Structures are given as structure tokens and as C-alpha cells.
Length: 529
Image (cartoon, rainbow, N blue to C red; front, side, top):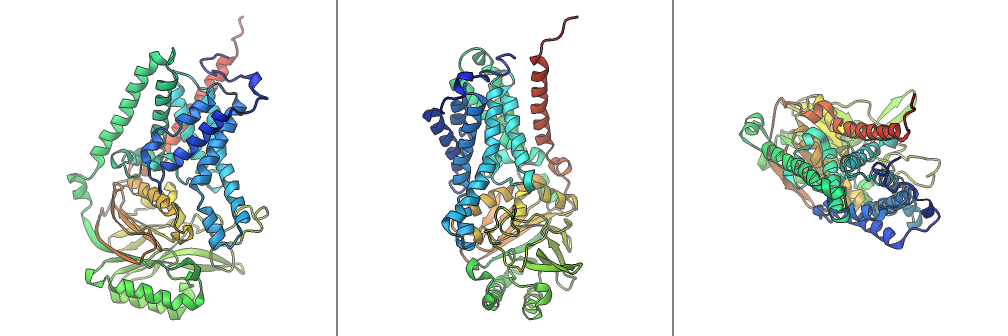
């Protein structure tokens, strides 16, 4: 074993020693800075420095200490990022504060394992030659695993911090959000090496690291400038239609009250009629905007059909649904499309929300009541299918599905030329979660180069163009009617990301594995014949 590969990895004297307070504080600082780079704080520039305190804290530490410090950094990050879970479980789940804290801590502990493992990998790969690339790839690989393991929870991956930097995020149509995560960690390590690893051989290699960073960031910005709207895009996106978002701001505490259903329909009818002078082609209501079983409630369903017919536009809305299979009723979260004079189509949500639509680890979390209204757990839909109207092929993303790029990719591969995200973020209350949710949805438009319309019950509703630009957005907890003339491409070309998915993340994982295999092979001296 050589120091160039595993510098400081073996520290026997440190194993029984307590963690230095300074290292613990630096780890906590790292987690808090990373949280501040996400919405609602939105200090996105901090992401480019957020890992540096963690790198300082784990310098010359043993693997066990590096793991603990990474776990502390993760906890300080996720507890401050996901605090809104207390609102969801406490206010709407009617749990006391102690019962609400437990799932938050449990989830945060699980998510903190990823930065904890990353800290071990970063410490072991303290190598001036390959450290920047391999450590950055390690972070990307762990983010990808987080998005897949245990149904996946890719909430607020590092790259999402840059959602307002249009020139940077255009690269997502090639490598998804993971490309930005890689770049952010790479720059963090470069700054760390520059100011805290100035001794040889780090100093001698810094000029090459800076050149790599210049090519990486500069190339991304040049590509972003090239991909932003131009004359060619105007020629391709030449089919225009008038779209309307209805944000009714229905209070979650009364949303599922049967006595309030008629009033809910009154609000949607009033707001929708107020848009008729705009002569819309497409009207979108949010997730479960019809808080009843549309398929079996003729009284209230007739009102929905009536407003759709009166508008002369296609109407998209959400409603719970059910199917009876072998004597058992399965409940579904469904989006309907009622076209003018056409046949009603629907899409059933394929990726459900833990605690909102089903309870994971039921035996362990037996005391947590399901938050969504239905007489049983929701079941996932069995296929991804765009809804068709005229020259539109509309890929539906229901709520939580907007944070999973593979669902938008599947819709695009099925021919979708417009993405519609219907959601009900009322669960989150007045927290940072609605802003976080919006920031992730923006990447789905960039990855597929398909415009996205986001209709949210209490906000934030928005029109987003294929480059991730927020054209028009509403406010939180306010009745609003958003109107915009959007342009779509009738037959959009599939982007590199749509065709090949997360190949960048796969390459990152392979890079890390290959590096460690190389190290293992060279750990043992060759036997001389």
C-alpha cells in the first residue's frame, strides 16, 4: 500500500480517540452551507464551496472518523433541508411532535449514509493525480444509488442548486443533473487543494487541475450559450397553443371533506370561466383537483364535463380512481384528459409518495397514518403513456414523479411533445419544499427539450420552456389563473439524455470501481519467479 493511493488511511492511534470538536463543527458547517445553496434560501453560489469544510475536517483522519464526520455533515444537511416533513406529518398527519420527528430523523440518517461513505472514499483517494476526478465520480455514483435504492429518493441532488443558471444547466440534455453535481464537487476539491494542499506534489499539479476546470466549466458555458433559444429552435418549435393553469388554492384541511366538494367545483368553475376571454386551447387543473371518484360520481363529474365543453378547450385534471382486481379494490392517483368532443383519456401515477400514498416499512412505522384520502393504500399504475389531443402528445408527471428523470424520459421516448406536471404541494405548508420541488421539475424540460407546464394546487404553478427558463410563475397560497401562449415541436428530436439516460452516472461508477480495482491489484507485490 502506498501513500499516493491511500494517504493517511491507516491511523491506529486515532481509532479510540474522540472526534475533535473543530472537525465536528466543520462537518456541521458543510451540511448547513449545502442546505443554504438550495431553495428556499437559494444561495446557489455556496454549493461551489460547501464541501470544503468537510474535506478539511476529514484530512488525515481514519476511515471510521471520516465516516462519522460525513454522517454528521449529512445529518446537518438533511435535517435542515427536509424539516418540512414535520409539517406534513404533524399538521396533516395529526402526529404529535415526537412521532413526527422520528420519521424525519430516520430518513435523514439513511440519506446521511451516502455522504458518510463519500467521506471514506474522498479520504482514501487523497491523491493529487486522480483524486479530483475519482472523488467527484464517487459523489455522482452515490447520488445515483440514492435515486435508485429503496424505490429511490433523488430529492435535491447537488446539481439542482444551479437551476436558475441557464448557461450551466443546458448540459443536462447530455448528462442530466449528475453532470452538474460532478462539476460542483470537482470545483470544491480544486479549491480545497489550492488553499489547503499547497505542498508538493499537489502544488506541481495544480496548473493541470486548473486547466481541466477551465475546460470543464468553460465548455459547459459555451455549450449552454449554444443551446439557449436560437433561430433553429424557433423553426422547430412552431406549433403554438394557448394554455391556462388554474391554481385554486384549496386548503388541504378541507380538500377531502365531502361537504366542501361542491364549493371546490364552484371555485374551479369560477376561475376557469375567468380565462375564457383568452380563448384557451388547453386548461390544466392540479393533482386531485376533483377530490372525488370522477369515474363514479355522476353529479360532480357532469360539472367537470360541462366546464370542459363550455371552454372549448382540452381539460387536464387530477382525481382519485379505483380498479377492482380479483375482488380487491386498488386505489389510483389519476390524471384525466377531456378533449373537446373526444374520448376521455387517463394516466395512472407509476411512482407513489412514501407516507402520502402508502406507508413504507409498515411494521416498523405502524403508528403513522396514511396522509392521502382513500379507503386503502394507493397502487402504482402499470404503464407510462402520454395523453393525446390534436397535435399534442402530453406526458403527465403527477406530483413526486417530477423528481424522477426516468419518467420524463419514458414519456419523451413514447413521443410526448409537452410535459405537464400536476401537483398538490399544500402538504408542505409555507416551507422551502415547494421551491425545491419546482427547481427539480425544471430539469425535466432541459433533459428532454420539451416545454413543461406545472399546475400546483397552492403553488408554485409555472410555464417552463425547453431551456429551463421560467416564463411565468405564480405565488404560494394564492388563487391564480396563469395564461401563456406556448410553442411546442410536433415531432421533437430525442436528446442524448432521452436516448441514453444516465450513462454519465454509469461512467462515474465504473471509473471509481476501476480505480479501486487498480489500487487493490497494486497493493500486493508481484511474485518473482
